[in-house]
Amino acid sequence: MKKIVDNYLFLTDIEEFDQKLLDMFFYRLSVFLNTFIDKPSLKMLKFHKEDRAWYEHWSNKIVFLSEKYRIESKYFSFDKEEIEGSTMIDIDDYKYVFLLSDIYHELIHAYQYDATQWMHGHVVEMSDVFVEGSNDLFTAMITGQINIDYTRETTAIWYFLRKMLKIKRLDILYNATRDIIIEPYFFTSDVYKIKKYVDLNTEGNIIKLIKHIDKLNMSKYIKECEQDILGVHNLIFYRW
Image 1 (cartoon, rainbow, N blue to C red):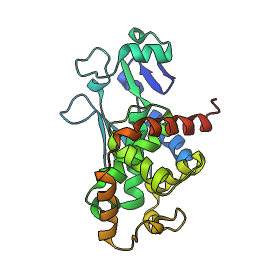
Image 2: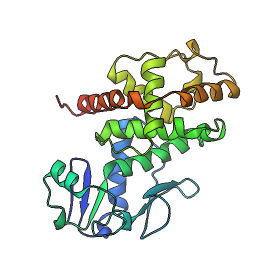
Image 3: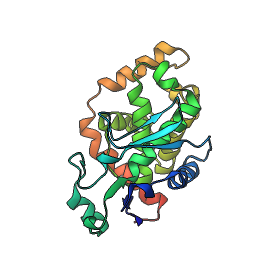
Image 4: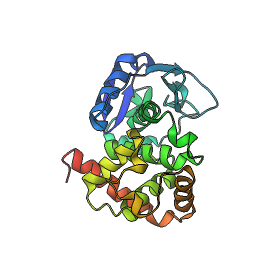
């Protein structure tokens, strides 16, 4: 038996998370990003020393470590009481809990790689700011789950869009975040007036911009960033 409640996926058996289910999330993400790529395949491992999940760009596979999501596992790192309070689900009725933010995060990496071949990672050495930051920001917008692993990088992207480019409307903030993910020419586009702040025609200037953002103290902007994330989420899903 599987159930999705408040952006949590509950499973009684790990076999319930199959390719068909991953495809459903992939197609839904295609709607959110308004684009389409070759869909990745699913790879489920029991345990590994790495993170909970990752995207293998050489095989186009989304990898999940099932033990990290098994409720009774010593590696389960989510707050059971918080999940039950948010979903009103008796967590003991299930064996596995997946955050939809984990699923969408790795699927977004597939889009990033397809669109840019990790352009931000190869051209810009400090890739986490734009690759992971834009990913976590968009993931949080569509799930409403502020379960962000890259808090500083996410807030930095928000700061770049909201404060440096002075984007005021939440719908434009959403679209700009999307464009960073799938548009390899985002940094040379005049649409968001990036050239007003720095000439991005050369590799050195892109690095200069990122280094500038990276040096800023983002901690004081975290709450404001989270408010905007929830504002976009509520805008998408008619919540007020």
